[in-house]
Length: 213
Ligand code: NAI
Image 1 (tube, rainbow, N blue to C red):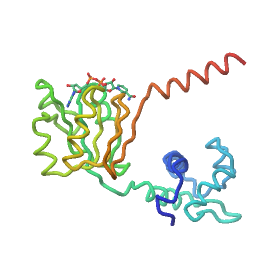
Image 2: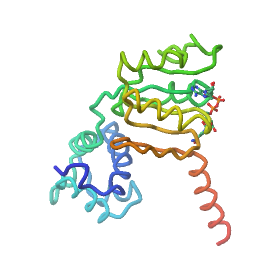
Image 3: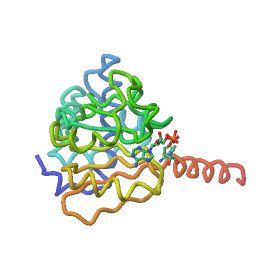
Image 4: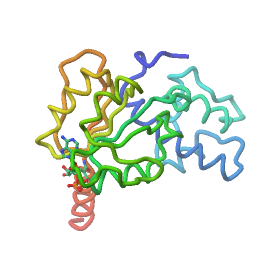
């Protein structure tokens, strides 16, 4: 199977969507699917699907299509869903609490082990199975538990400073919601900046385009 480095980033970006659709097909009891059927479902062309999945050695068989469970498993392995990367949330405000309680980290290769906030009044608050810890405890916690992924749900102004500190404490991956486009000048640090507003703007553009037709 190809190593991640040899798969283009645009294919990697499509993988979670394949994984989700295949997971739903599995739940509905579908055992196999042709690239044409999958393309209709996912609104991609069949050749795009064949091209994408060929990057991993082509799991499809002529005349049979794709074995749904097997393909789901293989894509899951490529994505790393079988990992258990220790993860912490920084910022236990509205967004941090929503993410900590509504995102299923376990099925996505991450294990949520802590949530931190600097506000004194939030310390001790129960968020799902976790209790909010003060940021004064962050250093000790990281040295002891060695988390590698941080979900940043803090204001823009604090993001660079806290990210640099987390890097010095050994964290390597940042799921950054802070509206600050984080770039870290260290090797082997992974950043995924998320802006829900950008997604909404794409929708606005689509709505405008349809209206103007
Ligand atoms: P909020 O004000 O409810 O919570 C922010 C929390 O971060 C507060 O509890 C605050 O005490 C804590 N905090 C601030 N600096 C900190 C630090 N250095 N260390 C630890 N904790 C710290 O705000 P909300 O609604 O939870 O949003 C959080 C951030 O996410 C905001 O900057 C907001 O603009 C952004 N946001 C981003 C979205 C996106 O799509 N990327 C969507 C919604 C919000």
